[in-house]
Image 1 (cartoon, helix red, strand yellow):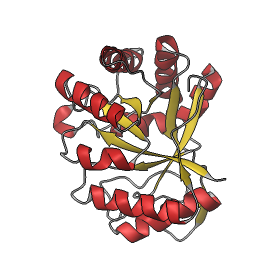
Image 2: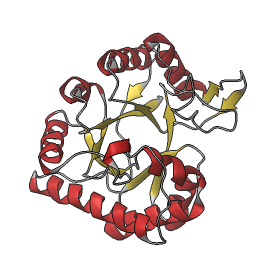
Image 3: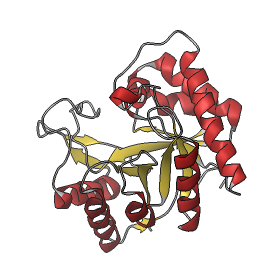
Image 4: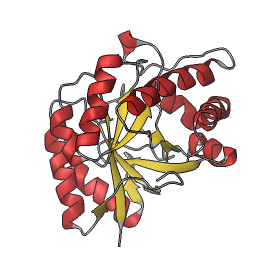
Length: 251
């Protein structure tokens, strides 16, 4: 039986959380860096718990004007510190609500930088390991981040994207470039099903590339996010794919 986790970035103030939460199996919750505060963290944790959705931390560069999407160069150790600070804040909030974290997935610029920068990836893996070795580290499929997590002894999850365009090298097309987002819900659903069923995706130049998918991401900040989520979930389920949260040692 083919299974996949469907994750979404939530608690970022987009206003779609109540519609999206019942449709996903994992929630990546902004924890005060690029977005979010104590109130939004508490509300999003409670919403996830209500729908039995796995709770994950979504740390990012502390750069709200750019929504954490711009890559930044920080002194050695600073990435480790900011990840630890943000993940700990959400973990404490979850504990207060009788819940616990299942995974960590970096956000935006930090995610993209960690995908190719070994030092940044290593600092993130170290921060997660020191906080809770049972947490699953989520990163772009085949990236430096998942390799760093594996090397540190963490459970890792290769992430693929139903609603993002791929470059021929397996990286995501930058949001600053035309066509970076798959704007059609049917096309996004078809891409998601193919990623799960075949482990393949068509890059922007027509190249078919191999992409491992342990979890599929659906972005929750677009105006049609709920429609996309409904279409993607329906497409997966109609293809006989079971939606299930990531399973790690702490599950």
